Image (cartoon, rainbow, N blue to C red; front, top):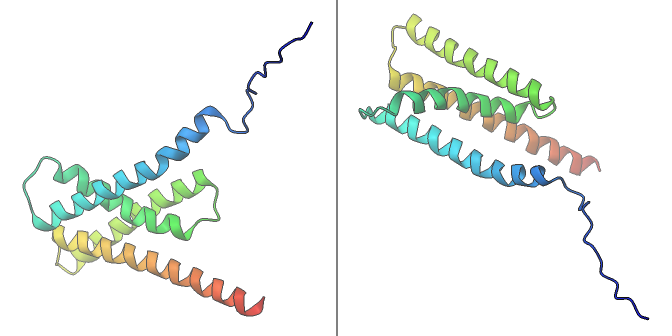
Length: 141
């Protein structure tokens, strides 16, 4: 008598079921965050009257400096980096507001532009520093 061997698929595929979905959603969530932040900045700069202007601009004012700091602090653990980035974003916003108030040049547009410039500068310095380190490793290796 001959038996037909049926192979049962292995339940251990090397990856957890929830982990793959989370990794697939991360770029989608990052893109949505960039879109919401960009819309918030544009609504504030154009001074368009919309009920979404306040929350989207607030999101931009927190997310832009936090993203720039997160790029610079990749060596930290994820939760520690999140806490430091949120605290740093709040500190950047408070310092920009205090500086503009002290100079008597406060405006919403000016604040958004100042936070954008500081965040972009921090991000560009981080990228330049990494490129310089990579070039130095190539020369020494």
